[in-house]
Amino acid sequence: MVFATLLAVNHLRPGVFNEHKLLKAEPTWQLARTKVENQINSPWMTRIETGRTPINVLKHGPSDRPKLALTFDDGPHGKVTYELLKLLKREQVNATFFVVGQMTQTRHQMIKQMVREGHEIANHSFSHPDLAKLDLLDILTEYKATQLAVEEITGKQPRYCRPPGGRMDEKTLRAASALGLTTVYWNSNPGDYKFTDPNDILNKLRETRQNGSIILLHSGLPATVEALKTYIPESIEMGFDFVLLDAWDGQETSSNPFPRTAITGYKSRSTATML
Image (cartoon, rainbow, N blue to C red; front, side, top):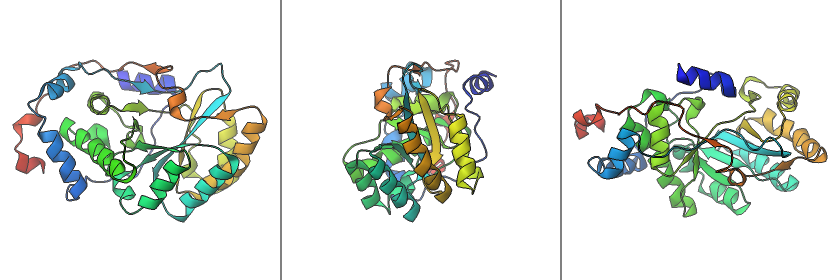
């Protein structure tokens, strides 16, 4: 009920998304699981279980400033993402890329280019599952594996995360916070994955353009890149600036919307079962 209220108020409205199974055989996933399991009996895990870990959720920027934040989920992809990067560089606009950890492992140069050109790399889980369906250890492992994958490429770990499909629950928020991540949502969702005509996406972007918008898009869609070729210069002409999330972090955050009940049950399973 609390989650449904949050969605209605903030227009998050997760849609259908490509839910995947956990990539438990991947070495990076296994390394992350080992690191998480080593903390099972630590004060760190106890704080997560009992709700004593502070939680940050970033939903939008200040509404009194003409600033927009472009965010792209589900990548990195191939040719289309390179076209997107070319556009952003030409327009001198930076964006936040919420990457899937497993997909970064074959695109090191693309991730390095993103960082070199001033973009933010954020965490979109390792396997792209529905995190709200997982237990605490699996959520921690999914986020931790992407932290490790990105760190291997860039030398530092992401500061922001977004659960695939926007699915969240108490465990999801606690796990993110415990790993030093701010969970990021959005208040502008043109639903670009539903359209093949760039004009449809452009019209939706225009409808939801407002001060402080965190715009949810996807980095592998040609129609999205085409729509942005008009939307970005048009927005700049109207007086909007495009900013990274750190411009707003700590200003427009909200506390955990879920009751902080204890999380129990996962320790009863054997390590062999969990792996």
